[in-house]
Amino acid sequence: CEDDNFTIQVDAEGPDLKYTWFHNNNVIDGQKESKLELKKLKLENSGEYKVVVTGACDPPATSDIISINVLPATSIKKHPSDTTVKAGNYVRFFVEAIGHNLTYEWQWNGEKLLGANGFEYIINNAQKSLEGNYRCIVTGTCKTDTSKSARLVVDTTTVSVLEAVLTGLNLIFNEYVENNVLNLIIDSEIPTNLNLEIYDFIGNLKLCKSLGYIESRSYNFELNLDHFSSGVYWLKLNTGKQYMIKKFVILK
Image (cartoon, rainbow, N blue to C red):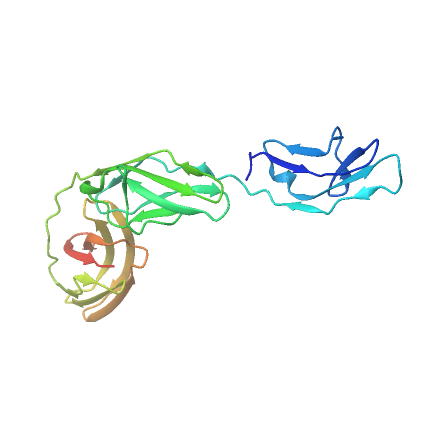
């Protein structure tokens, strides 16, 4: 492993022996003894080693080749960051680490999170009960490293949204979205321009879309919500003079 010490030694017989050590066929300066000591190994110390022994009598003797593969020490290079989100939002903690045969263990307030064994930990629906300190323990062939703790704060402040109706429009839609598609059937009794807006539960605008000019008839619309996380949302239809607000839930 990186930073370990390693020693290679040969036994030779004869008068006036001299030793020349080689690393990848390059002479290692200053190494003239029967023992080669490699201290605090670095990755560049990987390779093939041999020694040529000369004495008063020819020919010189060459040792067998010894191959060394120095494995990188486990080290976290990027740590998770403190995060503040609104309740119901998506949270992602992650680490970037180097090493050999790495495994990951995420902890919440010092307790192991079951099944959290990747380089990232994702919360799809943040709640107040999930607040706390998150960290990752990375273990490899060579040592273990622990990330800094990242603090999760969940803001549960809400805004008041009352459902409203729009005169002249009748809306039918799937209030529970399970396939990422929101289906809208709009029966219009009046011709008008119509805009659609989607807000999260605490009032943040997530989507704004023009449905164009509609006449006095029925219309079908499909909205792909693949990029939305699970949670409660508000649907708003707006003519510019009146609006309609309805609640729906995305289930994933």
